Image: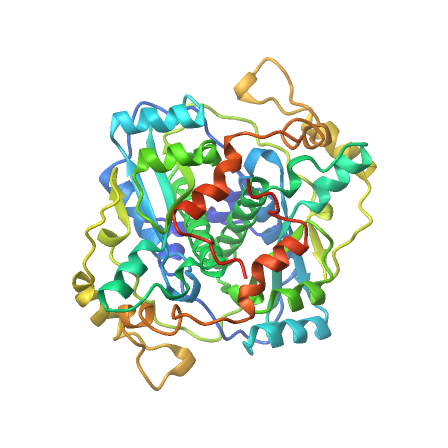
Length: 252
Length: 252
């Protein structure tokens, strides 16, 4: 394994869900933004924006949507926004139509831009000794989130990120061994769940700080359980919400 | 600005499109995979895989789809795959149904997992002195790409990545100033294209090595031009291709 400062932090990644009562310095904030700004971008279209949520009322509303007490609490809260509004304004003010901005293709590319920027910021934050937790829960109620953020057409809040000074040191969470996730040339269809026996045992040795009194369930039991079992919830509003923003409309 | 090794590389990111005739060492390859493996993952569902394409015939076919001569040429070619197939197999072999695997919600999360892993690998590669170029062009003909990769249901090739030893040193490409992309609390709707005048001039000082003889067009002209102008091409097959894989089917 090659070792350097960057990789050391990457291999040591843990989600942090408890932060000290301290916000980012201007210098830290600017550095994270500059890193985001330098992320690779599809076709040089630069289709994401970042919202830094400092308003207490908004933080509270977002916390309620996510149902996670650490969201918008200690540290800094960012929402990474898929953003085609800016490019629409450019075209509109230059006398042009929306062109391909409403297609799934362009949405897909903007989503990619946005996610690459999130991970770039994660790596920068962790390199400074900060901790982060990605907030997929900003999509727990997509319509409510759009309302809280008051976002214009052609934008969508893809992912949240809480960043701060860690106030906990969780165990490293064991991930699937590489033999199950990295392949040469051919994707193997002959996966057998029994092959995960050893990994399942390793997962069960992990203590989740969210409930420090008990070990977590095996990986296969988690996948076979309620996370993916059939049910409907507000997360299923996501497509309606994306469409209501004028995005990913053109499916053919 | 905060300075460290990680951030130095991040701020110096350039897409590399010419690589030396040299492939990654086993140690480099394993390190990149281990970094990908340690990326944050939504709900611990671990829904991506990496295909390393070393087969010459496949590399050629992928190169043809992308229309880019450096794809699958010098260096190493990776395809980052949104992967819900593995979790389906777990559920199926444990006697369960597919549950929420076909929903947009779960697809969205798997897409996020996959993209975060791509950027994590990009940061690791660049920290080792390697160069990379993300290959959005693997989606230039989604149906053909699925055929070349022979992917099972519930998988989709989200993005390619060519990695290698740089054989060029492009200029740093100027990105939108932060005032246009980072906001506090409120997304500003009052964007005026005239505010981009200075940025447009900066962009025009950039020489693209893909056509070293001429400067590139201004940012606003690019956005107002053919990239986003209405036209149909095979990229618009993306939704049909995603659906044909059993993904993102349940839109409500």
